[in-house]
Image (cartoon, rainbow, N blue to C red):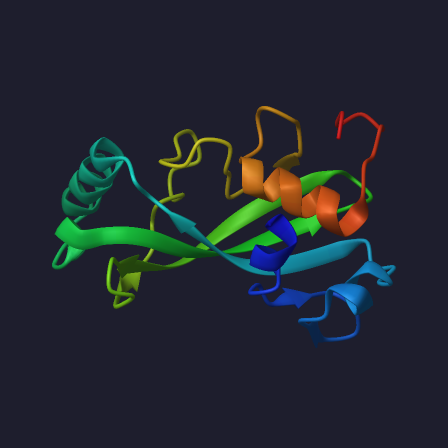
Length: 147
């Protein structure tokens, strides 16, 4: 099931953009980037995010139906690191609401296990789908990260 979902991601790194899992697995690059969409179901998280945007004087029109965020996830296989760069926020109908600030604060993220700075990929601490993507692309790695 995970592999079917990953087919919808655009993955970069092997001499350009690839949608083919077969070609991706043959890739020898140490850095990869993937566009991933993360769905936010917790209403409390959505409300706190809307309040944060309001306090930063950012638009909140349409954020009562905020549903997901599109992010660029970068992976570094050599160092076992990742970072997440938020792109855009979307409502439950797929309409773009605006530029995302969901991971704007360095000390606190609305999405547990996601950081805008490079951070180690660690089981139980890194967001589950990012951890799974890393293992899917690079396989298990017993070095320092416990992957």
